[in-house]
Length: 488
Ligand SMILES: *Cc1c(COP(=O)(O)O)cnc(C)c1O
Image 1 (cartoon, helix red, strand yellow):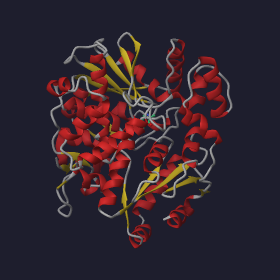
Image 2 (image 1 turned 135 degrees about the vertical axis):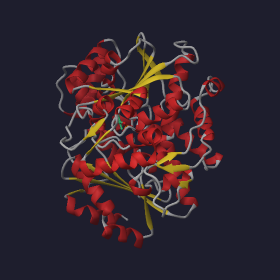
Image 3 (image 1 turned 90 degrees about the vertical axis):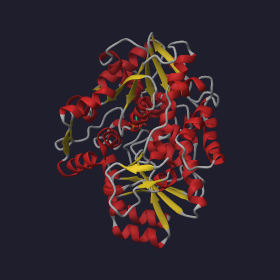
Image 4 (image 1 turned 180 degrees about the horizontal axis):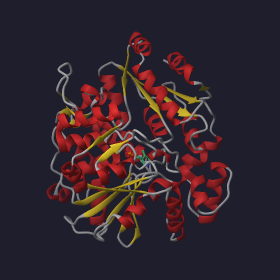
């Protein structure tokens, strides 16, 4: 299968590229993204064929159906990363929490957040492709907490890839910071920035457009790639678990094959939701995809009004920081899929130039055929955490945003999959607060919640507090480039 460009072609780049091209060099003409030219058929025939398959077999079948230009052997090696999850036979358990609500737990990987679902296998493939071509790539990440650890973890000690990771010093949880600064490998560099996540992200953007920096990279023979969800290599692995979760409901006798379900996705950059959209479009019986947001409710507005307007908005810091996003990159791929490249380019240009775009009524209705959206405040999220903890199910603040969608957005009470994107252990101070427990920092929060609720703390989290800190660099914005070049 070939990949085409969401904003059309500029006459300089190839109009179509292979999967490996799209993931090594993820930026397309006019600042657009790569999207699949077509989707494979994953409707009833496919579903019944893989109904009894384990996760890796299903994943392999899906990658095959996309006809990507990656050797079988490499695909298998990449999928073996799911053996590092809690239960290699079922890396994504689906647990019932209400009569018709089932939580699909995407956080059983090494960094305890759903980013592992895609980044683990993706890292293996990207590094192998770079090695095959004898090229060196640099991945630069700016993180508010989850992307950083998952990116470092997947690329550590991998050939032909170097990773630099910028995080806001003091702006992440203890667990998230420790996950980064204790990650010890010669190809990784973690840099704390004096400032908040916006400062880290804008520092990264400045570097990406800096001629001086590009020149230095060129001198060293280093190319740039990306590991965030603008890279289709992330998205392809985020289609699989939607199909898996559906088949789990069939296996658990909740639904018959072919019955429709709702999917509820806690969203930020819309990668997870886009995976759900592609699965639905490929034939998975999904009634609608319900998009849960926090106070940064740009997606709620977009879906309900057809207006995407960030011109007079500022980012709010919430208790679900991985969803604190205003420019949600993967919305563009939905626009492209529904309205084509020409229209997408116009809309995205309007967003860049004026900070806003408006869909026509017809276009808004087309979005609403697949999506509905709602947002929760931090207080609402805390109440949800406390409510379900009482009933014996502990969830993190991102997952909690889904339950307002569960209550308010379903037009019919049919079985519903709720995606859980992080383990409570990554956000334990917030969870403690929701439970009315006073604590000072992550370590105490973890211990007290573990004691009082009897929930386990995985070893990878407990051990963090005794690991040696290997990345001690914390600098001001001006010094970032020098730090990076010293490392490279
Ligand atoms: C990244 C992340 C999200 C948002 O996912 P998108 O694919 O960017 O929409 C939600 N929850 C957690 C815990 C995350 O790490």
